Length: 253
Image 1 (cartoon, rainbow, N blue to C red):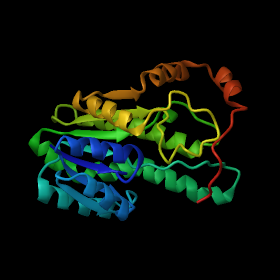
Image 2 (cartoon, rainbow, N blue to C red):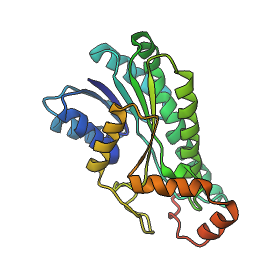
Image 3 (cartoon, rainbow, N blue to C red):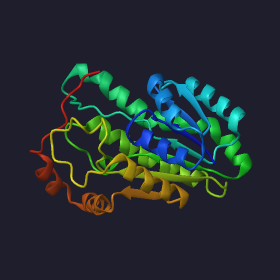
Image 4 (cartoon, rainbow, N blue to C red):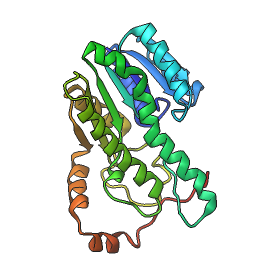
């Protein structure tokens, strides 16, 4: 199996890399921190691993990585666009504007940039699965996390559009919406995180959903139920319920 994965240096991405390495997959690991990628690659032996240091906001960097992966391993069976960032943001503050741009560019365009280099080869092979890691945070707007919620809502809509576009091509598109996973992204959250999952447990469930070519997958199952409620909750009730919750601290870009 050939697997290309962005955001592979920590959290869900690292857990997925370890999971697929254990099954003997050929891996392409893309992330900003080369030293962390090298650490993960060393632990993945005897799996074949290609490491690519770069930022998913850089389409050219992903195009180069994609071309090299195709040359080394051939057409990927699975491409996972996992890279993401989360920042507390408030529109009142001009200094938060770079943070809005970083979150939206990384979490939305980063998915597009990850998929684009491989689609032609996957169409030709009439095979493969494109996986976008979104979030339950994309179901409704979360105060203090406007950039993150907006980015994940956009990711969900983009992935649905792509799934329909690729209908009949042999390429599946899987949207994954995790709840709270114990990663560096969530460790600073100042609020309760119900149904918190370990990254390795999340990786196993995500890999199973990918293997089954699930169109839309929320994990854990408890958050899937919460998500259904959130989607249908009337706006006046939602507004009152969320008005006084603790919010993610601001980290201006």
